[in-house]
Length: 116
Image (cartoon, one colour):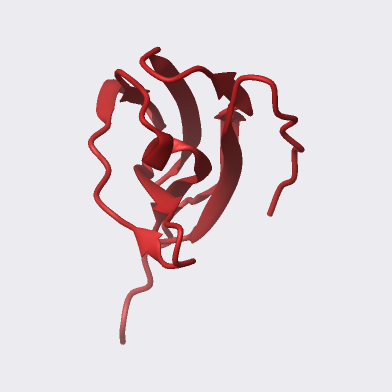
């Protein structure tokens, strides 16, 4: 006889998502993202480059990671024109993946929110 061990999983979801922002050149910007789930998710950040391809491995800090939640912060210091664009907060665990999108625009432009 084989034995079956049940594993309780909790749906992956965002607790806090990054918000669209505008910034002038040389200023600092912070995007925050918090996700929860079981197993505890990981968070990575991605940016859409001018060519339309994704840039992975953006430098982000994991500020807190407790229980089944994780809080990540992407800090952009001294904003340059190449920093403007679309950013993805990607939360992932063995149960699934969720993506939240935020836009960094230059001061004086409009940012429109959308979600995946």
